[in-house]
Length: 166
Ligand SMILES: Cc1cc2nc3c(=O)[nH]c(=O)nc-3n(C[C@H](O)[C@H](O)[C@H](O)COP(=O)(O)O)c2cc1C
Image (cartoon, rainbow, N blue to C red; front, side, top):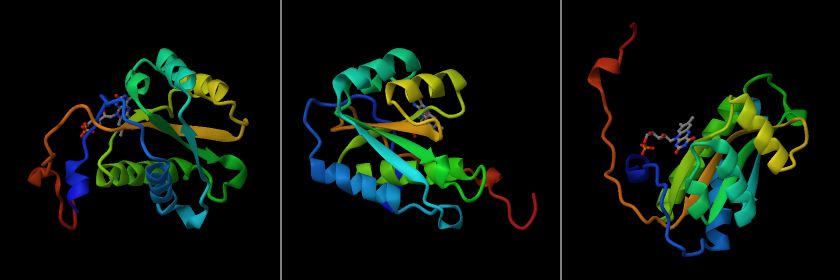
């Protein structure tokens, strides 16, 4: 699937708005991800408010991309819905990767901005997004029409592929 290999972290965006239909498709891709025992505890916060985007950039340290991004999607888990303890991280990571891949398919640029497990960032993002206590954020995905180009990746390393045993 070419989108997997074409995906790169895009941190510069044009001022073009991302259409609401594209955001919906991207979020649908997030929901399509596998989850532990099909617990489906992921929630997605679509952030388009410039003040919120900038205030997350202010506290994060590695999220300057949010200042130019049209939208960010916070990939969260509601632990009230948790059936299989601790697996929320993997569930949300699968959703985040689907979001990134769908963004490429739709001609958008995106970057994964880590939140979990950085305690300070978790706390500050929780406060900015007014999350209930049981909601945890894995990452934010900044999105927009790309204003930079990057080569597709070929990172296959034969020496890291093991057959049957290490
Ligand atoms: C768990 C995780 C956390 C990341 N956090 C950040 C981040 O906070 N800021 C950022 O600019 N990029 C972040 N990235 C993107 C990586 O820096 C990027 O994927 C890596 O350098 C490889 O480059 P590529 O995405 O262009 O292939 C993160 C990626 C992952 C998977």
